[in-house]
Structure formats: structure tokens, C-alpha cells
Amino acid sequence: MTESPSTSGGNGRGRPPTAPAKPNSRVRMSAAQRREQLISIGRQIFAERGFDATSIEEVASRAKVSKPVVYEHFGGKEGLYAVVVDREVRALLDRVAAALTAGHPRELLEQAALALLGYIEEETSGFRVLVRESPVMSATGNFSSVLNDVAHQVEHILGAEFKSRGYDPKLAELYAQALVGMVALTGRWWLEVRKPRKETVAAHLVNLAWHGLSHLEAKPTLLTRRGR
Image (cartoon, rainbow, N blue to C red; front, side):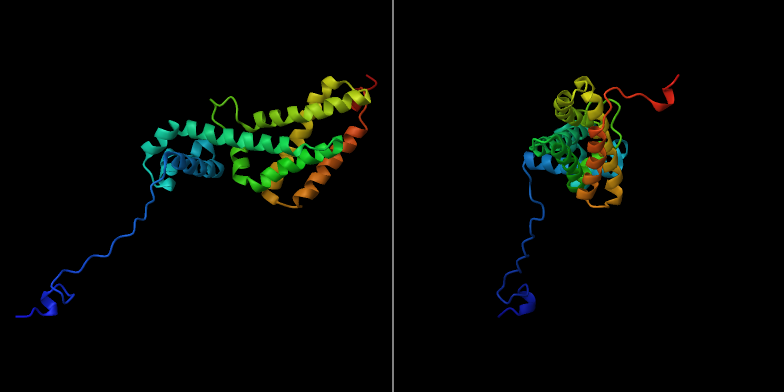
């Protein structure tokens, strides 16, 4: 007697239907790939929430891994934060160093300002990580230490210029800190408003800095203290 289709598994050939293969939705990452993924996710969360409000649970959840995987790569939140900050510091300093190619001091100031503003514009998450609060145990990697490193590069520019103009080159460090601080704080403001455009902001910053430097007094005094 010939089996009917209803008793042959529905395919008319006496065999049960073959279940369709399930696609493999999870691609296994190498250890290096997983580490890079966790760094990228950590960077984004630190930028959004800051160090204190970031949790390993959220990092693991976004990466779709268990918490032990994060601990295995970084030892904890502090370790992940240190890697993220170290990368941002190097990226910013490399950008500034690569930008300083001109010989004229004013052009060098323009290049430094544009490099910092360009980093803010293109690496917004990284900049937010640097300017947010850092853990108390972190001696380096906060925004102030980054600005110190940038200021040291600017100091070399100003030192040579001060010497050629007869100013005390020892004061170059003070002026470098002032100039870099001015650009950085303006950059924090500009990060939120995003206008005027980057080149206009840089031009006005350099306008203030350069024309101020061009008319420096050799031995300035405070008006409020004169005549006393």
C-alpha cells in the first residue's frame, strides 16, 4: 500500500522534512578584536557618563559578553579607562605635533589651534573623555596633564621668539600655558555650540594671541599697583 502524503512526513517521499539550517548570528572574535571592541565601547560610555557613572556591567552588555570577559582583558574599570585615556592623549599629541610644520611663529600658533579644534570636531567622544572627571588615583591622563604636554610644545616656539625679541625666555612657559589654556577652554565651549566654524574660531584665537604677543611689554606691571 502506498503511503499518503499525510503519513510520509509531508514530503511525499517517506522521509521527515529537514529543518532549515539556522544561520550563525554570532561571529567569534579573536582576542585582539574583542579587546578593540571593548575599548571602543568603553570610550563611548566614558564620554557619555564619565568614569564614576560607567559600569563594567554596561560595557559587557553593549559588547554582548559576560563581565569576566571585560575583567580578563583589562582587570577592571580602571584598567579600561587607563587604556582609553592613554590612546586619546597620544592621538591628540600626535595630531598637534604633526600639525606644527610652518616656520613662522604666527602660522605655528594657527596650526596648533586648528589641530586642537580639529581633534574636538572629529574625535568628540575622545575629547569628552579627557575633559570629564578622572578617577582620583589617576596621576596622569587627565585634561590638565594633556594640556601641559601640548603647552611644552608651544613653549619651544615661544622661547625662540622671546629670545629673538629680547624678552625673558624663561617666561615662555607661562605664556604657553596661557595660550593653550585659552584655546582649550574655548574649545570646550565650542564643542557645545559648534559655531562659528572651526577656521573662524581659530582665526579669532590667533588674532587675540598674536596681536597680544606682538605688543608685549618687557616688564609689565599691574595698573592697580602703579604709583603705590
